Length: 185
Image (cartoon, rainbow, N blue to C red):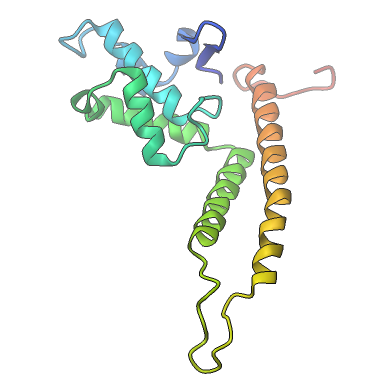
């Protein structure tokens, strides 16, 4: 299901209300009796946050989680108080569940988490560290150089995987309801 359409040229987010209203947690955000604020404005800020934080098409998708949260909060105009609303948090959990239910997106997220581990390792490796018993380097410079050279392949593989996942998700979003791709699709 495609809940959002983002116009990159005009930097404008549109909601697919027909599909959004099918999910109870999203319909609750649009419910007129939910808020003392002008409801459409609050709901739009909430959906903007959800898109910016969770959606794989978001410009913040590759940010670290805390940076993604702060950027999405700032860009959506959502306050910390509004962020803490239980209905909104339930909608966030539901979108995250929907967004991450596919095998390919779970694989991509796992690969990205592994890359973060590699980045952390490279940022913290100390080539001057020595084995106390033998006084030999724990990490050899030539091994570190080989690992750094391997990062090129890692980046290419990750970008290729991300491109494939996005393509697969885009193709899936054109199918509606419980329809399965058939012979003529």
